[in-house]
Amino acid sequence: MFGNIKMFGKLSHKLVNILTVRCSSICKSSRSAMTLSLGNGYINGKWVPAEDGSTFPVRNPANGKLISEVADMRANETTTAVEHAAKAFKQWKDYTAFDRSKLLKKWYTIMVNNQEELAQILTAENGKIIKEARKEIVYGTSFVEWFAEEAKRVYGDVLPSIFKSKRQLHFKQPVGVCGIITPWNVPNAMMLRKVGAALAAGCTVVVKPAEDTPLSALAVCHYAEEAGIPAGVLNVVTCSEKHAAEVGKVLCENPKVSKISFTGSTETGKILMKQSVDTMKRVSMELGGNAAFIVFNSADVDAAVAGAVAAKFRGTGQTCISPNRLLVQDQVYDEFCEKLTKVVEKFVVGDGLDDGTTLGPLINEKAVDKVDRHVKDAVEKGGKVLIGGERLAKGPAFYSPTVIRDINQEMAVCREETFGPLVPVIKFKEEKEALLIANSTRMGLAGYFYSQDIQQIWRVAEDLEVGMVGINESAINATNSAFGGIKESGLGIEGSKYGIDEYLNIKYACFGGLH
Image (cartoon, rainbow, N blue to C red; front, side, top):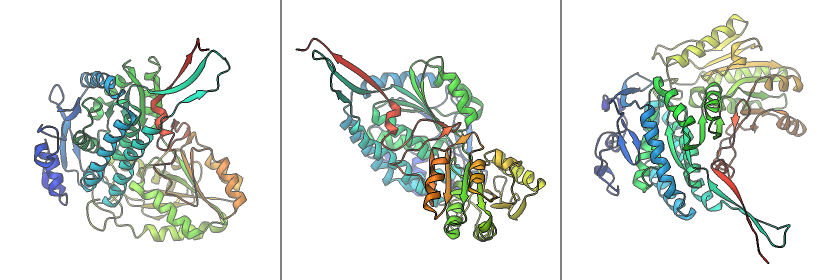
């Protein structure tokens, strides 16, 4: 199923085995010697092709070379996966929390032991630099460990009864089969953050990974199988962009699916919510962002520059919490722009697997087109390019890291999420002005600001209309912290002690006739 294996270059011998040979030859502890192909979907513990044999290509965005032909599944395969997940749920929900925890910990350990292979698969299909891919694997797998522990802390309540003859209590139960739809920009961590919580709660899942990055999802299924996760508990349906809407609709409308968890655009999230209404599904939505990054006059400018670069260029600017608008107060504006430009000019753009590369490609040429449109629009409306602002000859998915000053609110970059290596810098005078600009969008996922004024810190932290705030800090993600947005950036929480609640129902029981 794989294209030219030589294109992987630096990938380890073990990874090539994972991609091409029999499971038994690399995992002696595996329960079977079934043929493993990351070109097939994973349904009910089996690696299966599309019913009609059709496939779609997965390519390395750095060079356009074929990595794999992957099964292009449709409605029938999705329905089959749901049926198996529903059947498996009847047994999985009755596993004790401690038994589920043990299996999840075993899965976590196996993935950690193979994290370099997972990181290289991720970079090959997504393009992000290998250093960032390794961090993502550590971050993603940590959710499996975290929720393995949280499984044992799904507590109920015994209520002080208001009736002498009755006893009242609350207990929690898994919601059932969950449809999990994951993005291409953080393909390992976004899947494991959802699946870890769902499986810990006692749910079963059908995952539809993004068409650009299905191999990361399939690779972790391989290790789940090795860990002993029962057949049907974890299923992955792969499909091309052409059939994505069809597969998503089945997950949303099938009455055997009790919950949808989605990470992606706000536009798509709204469609999925509408499709889920008739069956009254629970939904979790982690949607688009338009994060503001505010630098006040009192800020440590060097720290603010370092934080902005780390947050903005992570994943080549393709993260939902990436700063989309940088607001810098007038007294430090010129200093910030100058220092930021000097840091950005040091980036080395190239293939994420190459030594020395510090910024990889975008996911595809369409993403580059959007960045280029935003740059040209800003320049036409008075923006000044300090560095970058052009496509690169390295390939169609490459764009130069770009900084533009003199940005105003009429520019597209302020109204739309760029999702690329473009830093637009807005000047402001007063705190109220900065907050007005930051809160002017319908998005409300994350926000950042740098200040040394403690009173200002409290005011701004409370007044920013977002679900997550970074205060003198741009690396806000953590396994134990709540991840979620407000307004049109989504519904629900992922990660933290609250993440598992998204996959649980509370049941009230009242025992009567007691004396």
